[in-house]
Structures are given as structure tokens and as C-alpha cells.
Length: 108
Image (cartoon, rainbow, N blue to C red; front, side):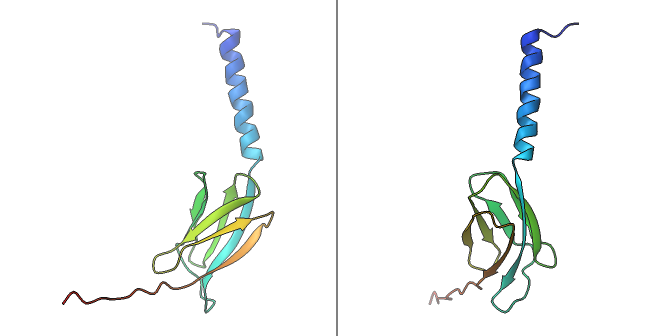
């Protein structure tokens, strides 16, 4: 069984594009804390307009491959206000999330 030259060329092009895409990514790391400095565990960090995302560990730390600079990442965690920040070549970040205050209203 032989592979046509066109099929072989398409396969090689696909492999090269995949390699190029993986090498063009940048690694960022950081920590997510609250206003008292306490780590926020299991916060979500997602690069906008991509499928790249991660969560913080038990120390509030994370690493994330981003597609390119500049980019925006959105950080969210239950009971905290969501925050979107722009990254311009910064490889290590610390983000402070505020606790979300919710009004309880009576239905009486």
C-alpha cells in the first residue's frame, strides 16, 4: 500500500504545524489569594478566547500555557468576584480576589 505524495505532504504539514503551535506557547505561573493573603484553592484560570485553562492547587498556585502575549486571563472561584487581567510578558503573577458579598432578601 502506498501513500500518495499529496497525502504525505498533508501529513507532514500537519505535524509541522502542531510542533510550531506547541513551541509558540508561553508558560506562566502564579498564585491566587484573597485580600488577607490566604491562598484560594481550586480557582479557575482560563485564557480568553482559547481552550487553555487550569486550576490552583491546595497552596493557591498554578501554571498555565498561554497561546501568546499579550493575552487576557480570567480568574474565578466560588464566593469570590471574578477578575480578568491582561498579561504583557509577565511570567509570574499574584492575583487578589475579593470575597463576593451577596444580599439576602426576604420573600415575605
